[in-house]
Structure formats: structure tokens, C-alpha cells
Length: 135
Image (cartoon, rainbow, N blue to C red):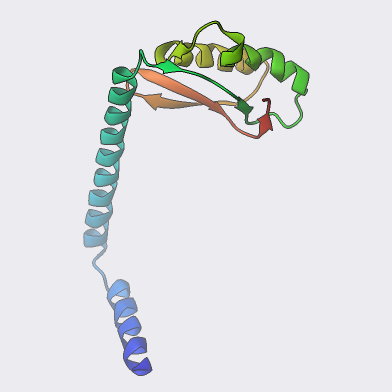
């Protein structure tokens, strides 16, 4: 049985070595197109979810800033603390929260913090890149 397994592995490697480059390119292109289509579908679905839920109440109990290992905690706290729901008289709507997170991310960007934009059809979600928990 072990010899049979080794033979089948050898057969697979032989097939791969002798594969037609055009066929491999065609398969890779089809795979890339499928991945792109799935990504686009997920983006549309995410945008629909955000749109459908844009008026739902949303609270923020903590904020974690990524990409600021050498930034003073006090500075970061002053920038992001207004996002916390405890500092508001009512919950955010999800649309309001996206606007406030974008405004806060833009403040951090002004101080040279790397902000990564995650595009969602018609909107952008912003994140940063190292960890600092501020709650």
C-alpha cells in the first residue's frame, strides 16, 4: 500500500511537470476571475448590510488603535475617547459611527499614523496597523 501511495504521488508530479503552460495559464485566469467575482459579491453584500442597518443604534465600548506602539497613551486617548458611547447622551446610528470613525482616523493620519482604507462600495472603512488598547 505504501508503494501505491508513492507511485500516485510520482504520477501527480509527472503530470504537473508535463502540464501544458497554456492550460495552466487558462486555469489560473479562471481562478483569478472567480476570486474577483466572489470579492465583488462580498463587497456588494457588505454595502447592502451597512445600508440596511445604517439607522440601527450602535454603541462603542472600547477602541483599539493599531500601528501606534510608540505613541503616548494620553495622546491617543484624547483623540479616540470621543468615540466611546459612554461619552454621548445617545447611541450612534451606524452611519454616524462610520462618519465619526473616519473623522478620528483622519486626525490620526495627520499625525503620521498609517491608516488603511478598506473600500466598501460607496463607503470606506478605516483601520490602522499595530496594537494599543485604550479602554
